[in-house]
Image (tube, rainbow, N blue to C red; front, top):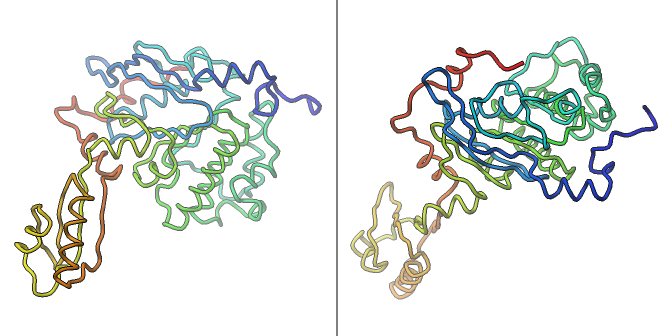
Length: 341
């Protein structure tokens, strides 16, 4: 075994096999439906994930994210539709396929007595050709904590251990569920750098998160799920632009001026609150040009001037709000049917 490497990693694939895999999506979902009795949780969703992407899968609680992911991971049976992960139907997956996926749950309970190295080593034994332990710990930034007991780690370090357990099997695709929930801002940024590094390693990452800035920073492509249907998909920039060109212009109200002065100068409606002027416009350049020309002529300063464009947060709030949803979250479905064997 030591002299043989499985024929699947980026470095181990033959030229022809590499070309075929590059052309085929890592995840392909077509008309996926899932019902629990009379309640249909997924209403025929379709999407695909390309090799090497960080794919953001977003949605409110109860939108169907957990149901979808468990189907992709092979732990839940679907009602209808076609699903392929790494060219295999997860419902008929074998041990060889499971060796090629990594799963990082939102929460895990690890034995606090074992060290980081011991914990990762134990999990590595489940895989046919795991990544060397030292290499795995390097990737997740825990090389200096290898001999530290799990119970003595910070929250961010424990989350890195979770990711290490998902990566130690050298997966082609990693399902990464809410990787930074509960972490402080500094730990979140460190986790982002680590996930960015996985892209450089050639891994495909299926990411779920409730942090829109996280999704925007990390994801190459995003799907927003709403009440069991796909409400929108695209790159973060494409989704942000989907709200149209409306932007906010804000600045401190100059001394000696009124809202009427600003509106006449800008040619747009303005509101004032807390000493700040705010204008919403679809013609940022035109309005700014008028404002700056007026400020120059009137010899006033537009302090704290900012132009804010729509963000992924705005898109999510607009698209993900349920409206007449059938009710019940993903957990409701879990109570109806046990995961598929």
